[in-house]
Length: 289
Image 1 (cartoon, rainbow, N blue to C red):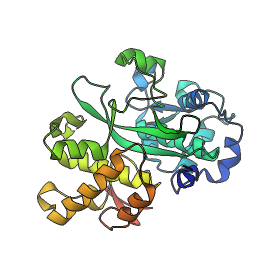
Image 2: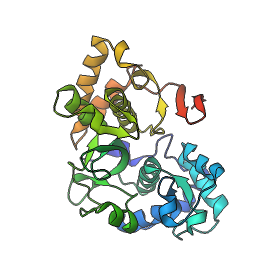
Image 3: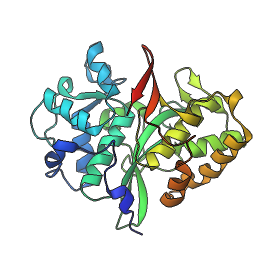
Image 4: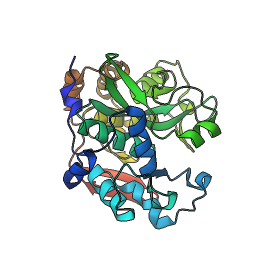
């Protein structure tokens, strides 16, 4: 099967005027991940690398589009993308940015790729941490492979990770729809899923809806909300739950039926509108995309 839809850029991953800068990137997935790691530094891990990020630099995590990320990357260091930046000249981001940037790089090479929103089982024992990874189509093996571009040697050592970050096992990363389905069916505790003090079914549903959007090539920020991602549990209707139950199995499989997911995504409760809410530290912002 040829996944042409995922081999083409979307509105978020489109590099714009920086497209020619991607032409010399390595074709090997391991080398490509190292390029991403040489361009980004995770805001929550910066101190582990000996970097004290000033508050204004931390705001770089608000950059949604790869074009704007690349613009900032070259403002910090104008050298080719393949050149690893010193820590202080790396773009401040988070897991979503590692996943989305890798996704953009792969699509620029015609390789089907998509960002996935869900939960990692490898950050805190016994819990599932809010997380994003990239998933790409391995043509030779004819399967979708999960890649966690965030996990460099330092993070693997700190977290005690033994699996291959270039082929993350499906029981180590749980997509949002599967987590939601587990918890709705009583197979898992909703309070085991989330980040910091943000947990529970409502939080899980947010990741589920963001994953549906990402499967339609709209890879928004972890705190961007709309529709069923921005609805209290008490206001969910039976029709809402029925829609989510129809979506969950489609997103849980490695071979996602992009056509069917795309059809369900057209529902205004799931589709990303022109204006969304972004729940940032300073308060709620209305964002026009």
